[in-house]
Image (cartoon, rainbow, N blue to C red; front, side, top):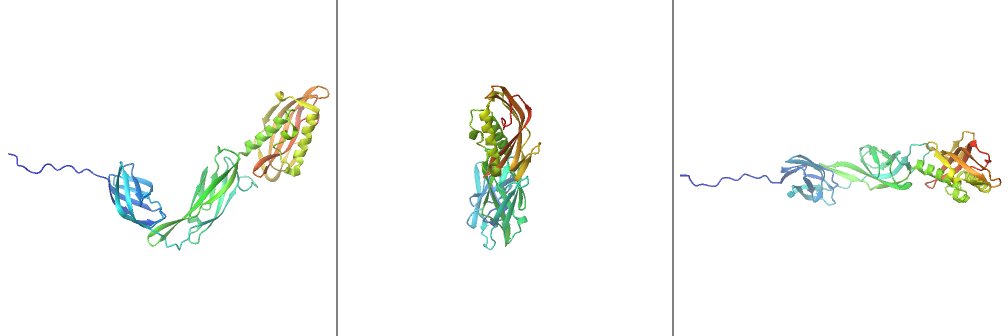
Amino acid sequence: MIACGGGPTAPIVPTLKVASISPSSGGIGGGTLVTVTGTEFGTDASLTVGGVAATQVTLVGSTTLTAVTGGRTNAGAADVVVTSGGKSASLPGAFTYVAPTGSNAAPVITSIRSFGTRPNQPANFGDTGETLTLTTAISDNETTPDRLKYTWTGPGTFVTNGTTTSWTIPADYTPTPSQVTIRLTVTETFTEGAVTHTNVSAPASYVLNVHNSQEEILKMGEDFLARFAQSSIPTNDVLHNFSTTCDDGSGRAEEKSDVDRNRADLIEDFNAFKIQRRGPVTFVFGGGLCQLPDGRQQRRVDACSSFAVHFEDIDKRTGVRGGSEGIDYISAVLENNQWRLCHSSYQSTGRYPSFRHGSAP
């Protein structure tokens, strides 16, 4: 006969549980690396401390995870909550947020400057794909600048070494030209008693004028020459991208005279017009000059470009068809954050019967 007794003991099913958090206190600014132990932590585990989501949650195993506490405004005891597998478990009041005494002031960003890759490149100016150097001045009475953390936000890539940062503007950034705002915060970490605190500076903004100077200048040059090759377009419309003040306005004035003479003497055949870019734009920021092969100079400019062109025309007086092939050298200047054309100097490499001086730009 089988003796009666208690039924078989049911197996114990593990449940999600939070057992401890270490360290058990940290600054209200957050940033404290904590280790949480318990049971049944899954790969989807998340952590909140005092209702604030922790970051950088890393599962070490089913009984351990690490994370970085978030910040909050008020000090005091806070619940530690782990959520995993659709369930949550808490350890009430297990972590204490501690406020700093206030004797350590946050860093203050006093200035930001940018430096381009070209000599005399203007401040607050950059080109797509260019890597600028950003320098920052910081005021902090307790921590040297090399021990602070610099956090930049904005398009592109930031590589920081202390107060100096290399910023690479995305090569495909659009639209250009446009103003781009990047922002910086500086974080100081310090210890009072046994608690580590963080002070974060007020954010500072820096506005940069981003261009695709190669395309902007070359397209303006092409636009000018294509308009020149259409006799129906009035002189002022041909010169709409020219500066009226560059080199005291002499470049535009000379070009206006050339276009007016062309319009008076010739009818351009736009169907025969050809143009080709001759290499990239070169930059001579700071009132430089473009040196032409024939010895002429285009002065007080910021950039130099050139185009191979072919014109065909009809002489209004004789009806004879002719034209010219040559190189047109076009300079540009940066005015009020806009590229403007400054000079156009034409060098003929081949002439046709009706071509006369002044019939090409």
